[in-house]
Image (tube, rainbow, N blue to C red):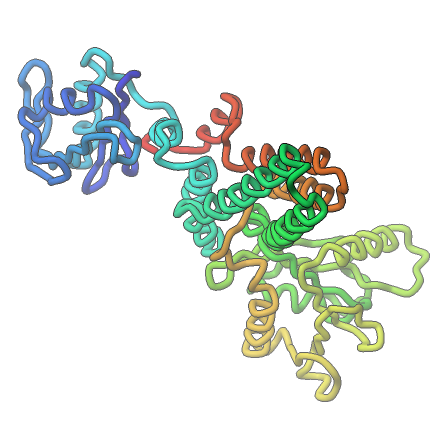
Length: 419
């Protein structure tokens, strides 16, 4: 295997630039630049020289002999002065050595996966961490990189393996085992697993954390939806007039509050009847958005408030009495109070501190749960065994145990060169 190198810190100029070297020739390549290397896992100040003996930089050098390293290989870090010319000169000196080449995007982490230092779910979590923009994304990604997803799935697989062994035993020793009793025990194990898997799948996925909880403002025409929409965004995103029916389409905007993402949606007024075809289209779109809302804020007569919606009394500075949370676009403190309620009501959709799956992982787990549910309904242990085997294969997909080159390329193309 070739030895690779790359700049792992931010692009220069910077105070410090870190160049990583990983592979079978990492230690000798670093020694060619620095002379003697410091003691393993201890920083040492060294003068780096190229092949002609010219001084490149005075740098801190750290050597990490494998396999207990980030990549599972010999690994060296060169902590350089962060000027462009310094980094370029050091990279050129490394490239001039036989057997060394510049790393491709994500190649360090790819080697970590191939050498068993991380599992597939951890690698995906690291990719998410690099692209995280909100606190919810960061927390979910950290949980994945620390192995939360892998531990959960491996736990399911261990218990499934035990169930599969029991099934095989009931088949092999059918004359000595009470098959009905054995099958009942297996059903209990599978039922518990199905419940746990479906509970995890019921949580919003990583992709939903990224997009944010969908908060929809709905109600009849001229109820104050667009004014409140603008106030909640702290900017003019919707046109506001005294004329009913001004908003005729769905208007969306993303906002980040307290490190968590929300997708705020303004809708057309839900008129009882209209002859305007454009307004009718807007109403139909509004109803579709309402059906997909994580939280619906209803600005209208309480008698028309949909089930599960939060009643909001908009224009509370003009309407001093009534039902619902009092809010006025003119009174910032009331808008802040509404946001506090929204944050509490959508916390399970925005805070990613527990195990969160990707959409593709969720599909595999849901299919595995369906296989196990089918196994639990079987009276034939041979058929039940086949359902369990299918479930194990699906869970193995979540762990990347059958990852193809295309899957690997797609994942690691999301990484930067030094990762």
